[in-house]
Structure formats: structure tokens, C-alpha cells
Image (cartoon, rainbow over all chains, first blue to last red; front, side):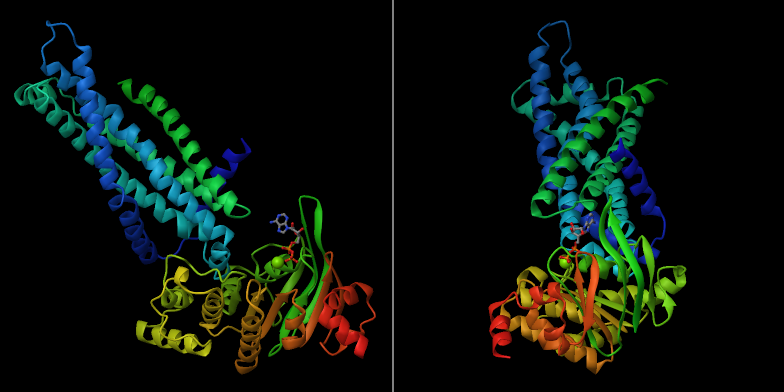
Length: 244
Length: 250
Ligand SMILES: Nc1ncnc2c1ncn2[C@@H]1O[C@H](COP(=O)(O)OP(=O)(O)O)[C@@H](O)[C@H]1O
Ligand SMILES: [Mg+2]
């Protein structure tokens, strides 16, 4: 609970005593490249496989000849858009981006780089962390869109190559009873997860004390705490946003 | 000149500094010495404002830094340069960008003027043709030099160094110490150096403050340090063999 209070105070310090807009603009671009461009290959690869596996699994479980084939594609679509793309990718995002944020900030702390910024009169929390959060809010939803696209493509390909479902049926299933609210919902989730992962990981890294060992501990804590927060938020958002 | 008055600081009940007062002179290398864990770094951080003391005030040429408002604090900060123990170079920036960073943040100089100043400072600390190297690609001694260049790039009135030669070989240590001494005289800076190294004390110490378990026990020059009559200081000064021999011969 003490940690939670500290986290809230930390979020407060991010928005007071900021640097000029131009400074942030440059930092946000740098962070976006770091966060987005360098994660896109991993996200695409994982998403494609998850989509393919989901398709095979769904087909395997639909044993009744009374269920039309295109239902497989519909099920895959729902799973990918609502859960696999935003949530599973969040876990990958926490592992790749969250850990590097915590490790980077932790190292800056123990090597006194953060003190060096403070001596120059810079609000180091805001200068270092705000760009990471903003860049995550921009890049993570885009990564989720890429992931959703790749996962469905993976399903489509494996469906036709393995002869599980024909391309025509797959496309028909994708469009069957499609409600675009699912996409909105996925993007809301993406924004929430991006904020949680980037802010929690930065928080853990920024307050590292000690040496190299502690940086490792902070990094691990950043990943586990972010994932816990994502899963809890996933549940709460599902409760909140399904009631329409 | 920097004046500190009655500085005290505790961490969760543990007293680290108690009632420290003193003066650091302009154009001199002022040393804060003492064994590890006596609160030297904490005192230095109180002086530069990285830690807020529980009690006491710090004056930069009569300006009260501890109780100053935002504008005065920012003004004083622009006049401070600091060299950290490991150099504290930003590892995502190359040497040139590291040294230029204070100018980017604190001034509105055009790029040409900034790069000229950066090259002058790098040359002054004896570094050439390393502008584009990353901190991970240079040696410990070079990192310290880059750290010094970054600390002096904005023409500071006050220079702070925390253990400038920790982790360096004896020869490089002397070079770094000498560099700090020369720069202090050349640009008439108020320099405060924290150290536990007797070589630095004898080499560049002009005004010395001895801390022992959070208290100031002695103050004086490097000539006087051998005859202080303070037992704790004698234990510190003559802990090393060379100094012991020297004492026996005196
Ligand atoms: N942020 C802090 N929180 C708690 N204790 C601290 C903190 N910084 C320093 N200390 C304690 O203060 C004492 C003096 O530390 P320091 O000033 O670093 O010693 P040194 O003279 O070696 O530089 C040490 O016992 C250290 O554990
Ligand atoms: Mg120290």
C-alpha cells in the first residue's frame, strides 16, 4: 500500500515543473522509435503464431458437423480482437519494453546520471519518464493493430494451407456478425495497458537503490507488477465496458 | 565563496551529519576528507541541493540557496558544475553530446557556438578525436575527463567533485587531481572536492575540512594537517605506510 501511494506521488511529479515542449517532442520521437519500431518484428511473429494456433485449436474442438466452418473464423476474430491482441501482446510488451525501461532507469539511478540531471535543475522524473509514457500510449495501440492483423493473417494462412477452412469461408466468418465496438474496446484496453506498463516499469526503475544486483531486482519487479496490473485492469475493463 | 551554516541531516533516525559549518574559498580547491561512511557525499549533496538538509543553510556568495525561491535556485544551478564518482555520463549520448548537454538545457546559444565551446573544453581536459565515441567505448580515466569537461562547459563559478580519482590507477589519479587544481586556478572557481585519498590531500588540498562520523573535527591547510593534534585526524592521515615513514623521518 505504501508502494501504491509512492506510485501516485511519482505520477504527480511527472506533470509538474516540465521542460519545454520542443525538448519533449524530440524525446518522444526517440522513445517511439525505441519502443515501437524495435518491437514490431517480435509482436508480428508472436501474433502470427498465436493466430495460427487459435485457428487449429478452434477447428479441432468443433467436432459437430452441424456447425458451419465459417464459425471457426468468427471465433478466431473475437478472440484475437478482444483478448489475444491487446492482452497477450501486453505481456510481451511488459517483458520487452517494460524491462528495458526499468533496467535503463535503474542503471541511470545507480550511476548517478539522474543526480547529474537534477544538479542541472532538470525535473529528472518528468524529463526521463514522461516521454516513455507518451511514446507507449502512441506506439502500443499501433502494435496491437499490427498484432491483430498478423494473428488473423496467421489463422487465414494455416486454415487454407492445412485445409481446415477455405479462404472464402474464413473471410465470410470474419465478417459474420461483426460489431466494430470490439475494435474500440481493444484500443481502449491498449491505451490502459500501455499506461500501466510504462508508468509502473519506470516507477520501479527510477526508485532503484544500491547496485547492479538491485537493478536486476527492479527489472524483474517491473515485469511482474506490470503483468499483474494488466491482468487486473483487463478484468475490470471487461466488467466496465461490456455493460452497455 | 560558499558558506555552510549548521548543516544537519538524519536518515530514518540515523544521524549522518550534525551541525557542520564552514567556508569554501573562491579560486581554491577546498577538500572535504574523512574515511568511508562519514557523510562526505551526503554533505556534498546537501550543498548542491540533491538532498535537503534537516537544518542549516547553504550560501552561494551570500545568496541563501536553501531558502531561495525557484528563480534564484535556477540561477545558482546554472553556475554549478559537478563531477560524479563514476563520471555519470549519459550512456545514450556520445561524448560530444554529453558535454554539450548543459548548454542545450541551460542556454540559448546557437549550435556553432556550442560546438566550439565543447571542443575547447574537451581540449582543455586533454581529449581530442573522441567526440563521437560512446561512454561505453572509453576508459575510466577518459570518462572522468569527459565528466570534468561537462562540468566546466557552462563556465561554472562553483565546481563539485565527489571522489574524482576513485577507481583510477595512481598515475591517472594524479593527472585528474592536477587537472582539477589547474582549472580551479585558471578560471577562478570555488571548487569543493570530496576525497579519502591522502595523495590528493597533499597534492591539491588548499583548504581542508576533516569529517569524522558526521562531525567536523578539524579545518586547515595541507601544511598544517601533519601537526593537527587531533587523534582521529592523525589516525586518518597516517593510516598509510608512506605517510607513517614520512612522519618517523620528521
Ligand atoms: N539516501 C540515504 N538513505 C539512508 N542512508 C543514507 C543515504 N545516503 C547515505 N546514507 C548513509 O549515510 C552515511 C554516510 O554516507 P556517505 O555520505 O555516502 O559516506 P561517504 O563519506 O563515504 O561519502 C552512510 O552510513 C550511509 O549509509
Ligand atoms: Mg562518498
